[in-house]
Image (tube, rainbow, N blue to C red):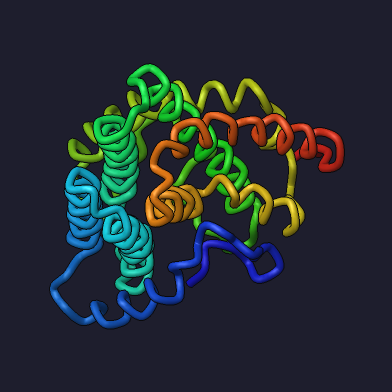
Length: 260
């Protein structure tokens, strides 16, 4: 089952691992593996990538970063196949992502000449970029007939636990999620507070926005590592943030909100 209705599906440049993820998920469908197990597995792949960076094995690091990105798509596919949607899984996935993003950049800072201050700015920029992608994507999913609505446009309250998970677990992970992502959500909502009124985004626009998807960000990091351009990673992602204002400007100019 897709997250979007057929007419809203677009070329997602950050979702290049989806075909492989579907194959993996189908292999795991009738096993004891759960989506949570897969989430832990992509965390392990990310940690291996960090170890490779520390050992200056940059090509291998790039490989495990891409592998992490692919496995990251498996848990959601497996949840849909097993028909076991989970807020615990969704929040855990997101928390793992932000922790690994920070660790990737701190490790890059450690083995390169990049300053810690610039590294932290780059981390902030990467998260803001990803939040813009998620903001528009979640809006599209909510307004798409039959679209996946596990993710919320506005994360104001802890959701009611689904079957197979406890309310306490959902509440705890929701608090952690809002703590680490809240500032980025607030900034993007402030920059484009009327976007949720848009009933549908054109496919071409969503393809442009997918340049900020986590998968594409990780692909860029893996590419720069493989080319031994580790010193370029932090300044690149800081400059890459200029696209935020271009994308929001395009949305406001050409894709007008409607009453919903």
